[in-house]
Image (cartoon, rainbow, N blue to C red):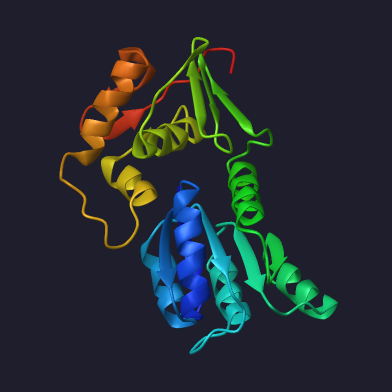
Length: 222
């Protein structure tokens, strides 16, 4: 899942980006509020990790603009400001969660997964679509009771498809959800990943909607 990290501290930002990437996220890193504002207007993100003390545009002002524009992306504030009043202003300003520095990267990743699940209408950590089960935290997927051996990109693609099961997703949308800034994307990369996923699942588990994109159908009772 692609997320936006907004942090001006180079050492902390580098560490958070590396840690969240290792946890399976695609991470774009904006180093000031104006750059983050532009990124949120032009890109699609599953969540935002937001520092408050940013240059050029404060984190709270950025958050205000995001919510005023009707953008419902989950926002987790990550800051050294630990006063109760700061937390209240952040949460009342539209943030979904609040983590104080210093923090544990594993907990940060878990909180992000929870925010993304809730934003997609999924409360349980285990996703189920038909005969496919996916546990993002354990990085484990099962089809018809059989564990699947998936690459990091295949796992991320399956996660996106399952979160949006029943809806057609374009190649462009999938690419935006899977790849971070600076990553080279071959023109047929999404098609190749879909091909490999179908071989490991079953062809009918991922349908092609000609001229539009791909669809993971829900079972009739879901």
